[in-house]
Amino acid sequence: MDCELTAAIERPASTTTEQADGLLRLITCGSVDDGKSTLIGRLLWESSQLADDQRQALAFESKRYGTQGENLDFALLVDGLMAEREQGITIDVAYRYFSIGKRKVILADTPGHEQYTRNMITGASTADAAILLIDVRQGLLPQTRRHAYLAHLLGIRHLILAINKMDLVDFSADRYHPIQQEFRQFAASLRFSSVAAIPLSALKGDNITQLSPHTPWYSGPPLLSCLERLPLKTDNDADFVFPVQLVTHPHAGFRGYSGTITRGSLAVGDEIRVTKSGQLARVADILRMNARPCRAKAGEAVTLVLDKDLDISRGDVLTLSHAPLETTEQFAATIVWLHQEEGLIGRSYDLKLATQWTGASITAIKQVIDINTLTQTPGKSLQMNDMAFCHLAVSKPLVFNTYDQCKTLGSFILVDRFSHATVAAGMIAYSLYRDKTIHRQALTISRAHRERLNGHEAKVIWLTGLSGAGKSTLANALEIALYQQGKRTYLLDGDNVRHGLNRDLGFSKACRVENIRRVAEVARLMMDAGLIVIAAFVSPFRHERQMVRDLIGKARFFEIHVNTPLAVCEQRDPKGLYHQARQGKLPNMTGVQSPYEPPINPDYTADCHGRSTDELVAELLMRLAEHD
Figure 1: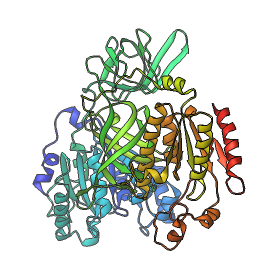
Figure 2: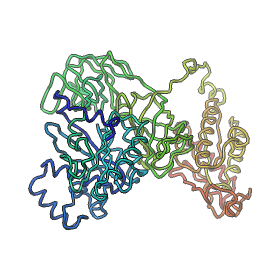
Figure 3: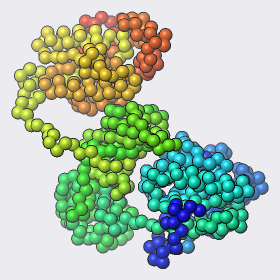
Figure 4: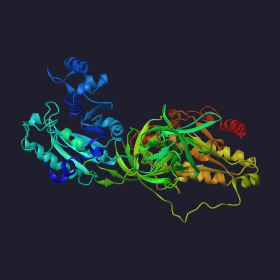
């Protein structure tokens, strides 16, 4: 065993109860079929954690589902889903509980398949240590490196490299040492406090509970000894952090604030601070199920009663008055992209951090990490299972901490606004502070003043539809009609904007998103000037149209779907774009190679095919008057 890598693990176990006792949260990870579930089953078997009926059930199910012939298939103790048993793989995260001496262990078996990376992140997010399995016959695989890097990102500081299935190579030291050395080189730049390598056979039990006679060349401890000696870190001595999950107000005489203490401890009489508002109060009572303790610590779910009512709601974060937290509107973070739909700069998502929700967008993808070499290259979008260092902006101040300091306030997820799927998980590295010299200037003349001068409300009328649908024609006719009514207008047309403001953008998905983001900001400024802004853009994606609606405000945004069938648009083809796209000369053409996502509930649908422009404009003017 490499002394440099394993010194922290191999030193004698501490004689203090803090090191020997306590709860160890552990995960197994690695590539598919490396033996993770079998190892956990073996640990449960060897630690005598199974009742007689479980042993009998294992024997029966090994015959029915097992992959080990007449022998027991220990993986079946963990792989609970029917699909897992039939396929012989792990899909879900399976949790098992056992003890090593006085130490209690919660062990999560995480899936090895790349498509279930999100499940691995779930299991690793609370872990203290990881057992990374490697099939000695396969060596380091991309998913092995991915899981090692994820463990590093998620703050796991102790890693045990379990080089498994040694029985299949006759316990050869020549097969073991090169793998250990290769992993040592890979992990040199990762922030593990300790790495121990152990040759073992999960199926046969070698080097699990005691040293195996088959590996006389190995002088380190067996697996259970490593686990028993791992130092544990508690959050009880850190500063108190309490994200409010629920405000309890059953009657006029009681108001409590419920949640789980993330870090530190709190006692009756302590003075607390509400981070965002700065309000102060003292703790009058601490309530727990059937108990009223004088003190509560990290990990406990409690309800706090204060000595006075404060303006507190779900999403607020409480701290001790002398240890306030910061808020941020922009920050840098490492992101793991978890969805098949690519992640794009400028696209709006919902962000959840602890109990806080806010809108967010990726403002820059600084570096995408190559999992094999750990080299970093700039990126324009994120694909499934990509890991990247990004800058993000949120729509309102967010109470945060760095992930290194506090996992709860340093970790977040991104959620798609339409499908509500979790698309990414992230770990905050640091806040991006705006230049202190930049402040929002208060102006005397407001939009309301300009609207009174103009004699009408400002708004944004947004036309969306396929190329050739008639957006520009209808927008131009609508502006003429509004102008004749004495309204002050401006028409933003897709082609015109690309001659100037957006001349640097192409037609990739990422460029289309950025195109609409810039136009939305311009439209908002023009609306603030008191104008009726008419914007005619293909704007093919619902996400970006929703982003414009949110930016402008629902009351001042009017969406028109110019609903002309694709066949008619192709027949018109005024610019010859469809002809070029069908010949393969024009990539990313909306409606041909790139999708168009029609509005789900537009304010007005313009069926240009078969109706005159004058008819549509007249109808539109009536609808706009009703909208006012």
